[in-house]
Length: 297
Ligand SMILES: NC(=O)c1ccc[n+]([C@@H]2O[C@H](COP(=O)([O-])OP(=O)(O)OC[C@H]3O[C@@H](n4cnc5c(N)ncnc54)[C@H](OP(=O)(O)O)[C@@H]3O)[C@@H](O)[C@H]2O)c1
Image 1 (cartoon, rainbow, N blue to C red):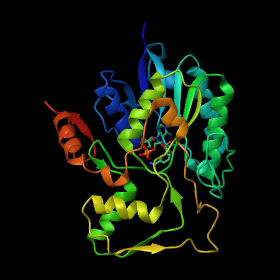
Image 2: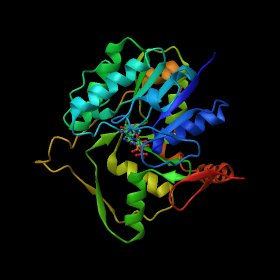
Image 3: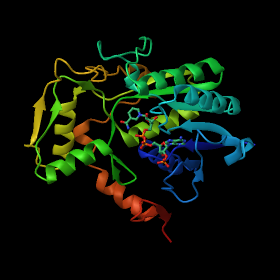
Image 4: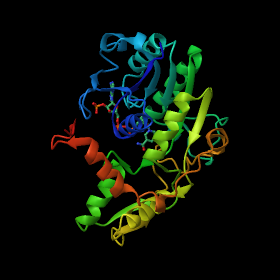
């Protein structure tokens, strides 16, 4: 039988991936660990159970892994859990979300062939998970995004939500003018993840938007959201900053463009549709005060 897709983790990106699959007429199974955001979500914790105990694997042919587990301090536990997951899913197509953080930020505009040099626990764990998946011989695609931003099912990403809250409280805050990222709008990334899950492409794909400083990113986003940004001030990375202040992890995403024909949405254009997407969401789900959603009658 043709199998279903399962999306592991319905956080910021996972929700948008579930929605993109639903819109494509291919509603997936989906999991949560602590916060059941969507109706029908299956409880699954990578560190305490096997996927086979949570769901009938014979029904599934595609695994999209959008859970964020790589900040776990016990790397060997994480690696064992991921090895076990990839093993039980060895007959499935697997799409794993990694990160630009696997690079040390000294070069910028990284291509897929560049060697990672992870400097933080999160980045070392991401790299280890990439390596485990590549070693399995599974049918896989690893996607490395940079900042992911925008509205996912009506919810603004935590970075911009925090900055907007500061502005609205009248607080002044800084963002770096000499730290560079390649931000991508969350719903565009979700569509790319879905396309990757349906494509025969094997290997690594960088999925970033235009290279820009972190300061420019916040300025452009918040201005498009019609916030008053005069309290957002330019700052420079301090000379004695710790290594996790990665200066330039921007991504060269030409392989993505060549493979899927995807051109990144510009930050200044990304917010024009958010009211429509919020209205559309309201028609589909009722978001509860607790953060949960139920299907609207
Ligand atoms: N957001 C970005 O800017 C960005 C940039 C680069 C890469 N990425 C990568 O993209 C992926 C998605 O990011 P996101 O921003 O959507 O993350 P997120 O909003 O923090 O969501 C993380 C999800 O992972 C689930 N989860 C956490 N621990 C788990 C565990 N032990 N077992 C099963 N599920 C677990 C959480 O479930 P509960 O909420 O139920 O606990 C949540 O649904 C992550 O791999 C992240 O590293 C994100």
